[in-house]
Image (cartoon, rainbow, N blue to C red; front, side):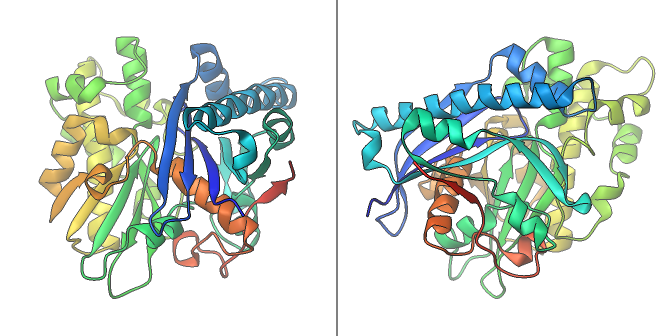
Length: 362
């Protein structure tokens, strides 16, 4: 039976669809092809607006689900073709969907998706809706990647952190002497991207260059660090409901230089990550970073200054930082089809291991 799976991830950064074609026959999965299909500005704006209550949400969500499914199918077929293969060679697609609401305390997390349409357009089985079963079992439904990190990145003699800096930052704590844990630390790129969009007219601050021009505003930073989520013990998860510009803006001093605010938001991301590691994980030997934040030079400098041990990109371990999350959802789809758990209770807070996902046949 084929060990080739497509993994799709579109995260809270709302920048596009990451897709990989992975071969799980080797002990360490091999990425045969990868691509990123960016979101047009209009789609990104529509998804941002759907994160908040508004008019005619059911229709808007349904129409966006169809548009996203077409992009998911396009990205899937693109990586298969890139590898010189036909869809029949692939066993299934693992598709996370696009999160627009995350409320595990209320019993739900909503990802826009139309797996039936993806299956129809690709001719492949689709595994989706990964979060619901974990939430039904009392978990947060997130983060879901620590189980995958445990399988492929654990080191027998080194205490490793795998840190994903997407819109939200989350980590996997791979300590040799205890079970793997994981949790969201707080904002990753989300606030930085939103502030850059407002003042630079760009979707992100390339390399953190603009933030590097500013100076941290200590009083603003202290007020931001007082957010209640940051004091919660793990396991925990969060989303745009907690961290958005509407939360930041009332605390910005009058007349503040926008570059100084950007520097402060970057320091907020760095500090919340490092404070969470110190409180929950101890002193790691290594912290390996993936996700869009790995390309923010200024952020990586601050993480290296604040964290003990080595800080670097997962590329140094042979896994592209841009592919790792999509690769995790290919692995999660494989777990589902094999009838094996995909969650870690130590990461999500669920009552126990569960087989995740819903299967839409080819």
